[in-house]
Image 1 (tube, one colour):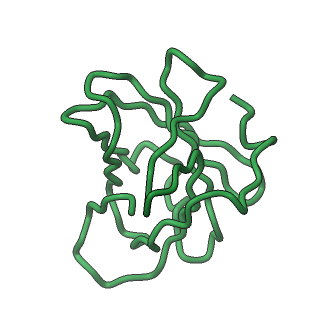
Image 2: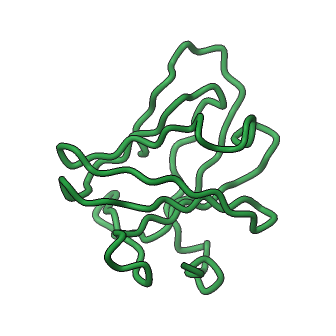
Length: 121
């Protein structure tokens, strides 16, 4: 799972900025019943890993399982890469605006919103 080292982040999808107060991120477009690994890389190439099984074509990333306060407005960009656990060499592609992407840039903003869940978009 060293795909990031070979990935040109200029070809990643820039997701809509998310509140740093989120408790979860939902990801649609996945295959129901499949186990996925979610790699989250920071600007220092440090890695955090989450897992989930897709239900009704979506997964929910429980952000409480990450290092506390990792995803904050001052932390810079994070790169998300998704793998099916049966193929850890090939990232999953998701389509946004008719283009398939195998990596996603996440940014977080300060927010007074009570929103605790957001879809990757």
